[in-house]
Length: 168
Image (cartoon, rainbow, N blue to C red; front, side, top):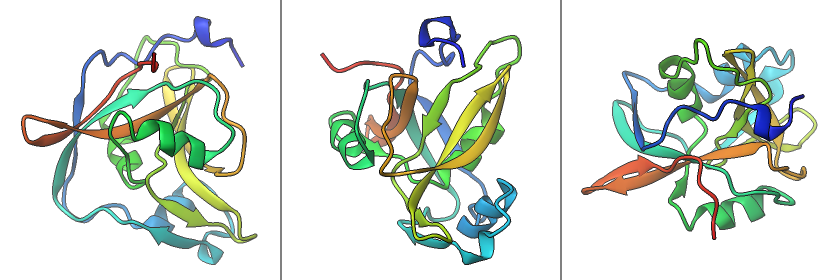
């Protein structure tokens, strides 16, 4: 994995809008599409995204955190941690041709899944070359500086995301 300084930053300087058209991704289908062979043993703990929604988001880099509870506590200063199903809209709408996003990790910590071994997990994307690959990470792991997280933010009465910013 490359050092954070060598990773091309996510090319969003400002908030961006995501739209879930029609029925949002089914939580267990998300697990299955990520290649987990035990997907039918997973449980979605929520909360769920409604259908036909558009929201505004930003990606926030908050530095080292010991677990998701600490991550979400810091993220609350910037907005609401994005629910997991927004990952699917992010994957389909964000393209990075020509950008080296190797090692970039972005988490959607506003929803929780329970895996087959009863570990709590949340959906993420990982950059490899110029493509995003999805997976689930455990909530009780250590999150280093390479992690960024998506938050939903309000803008002129609408929610929007915050981008790669660090708290002062």
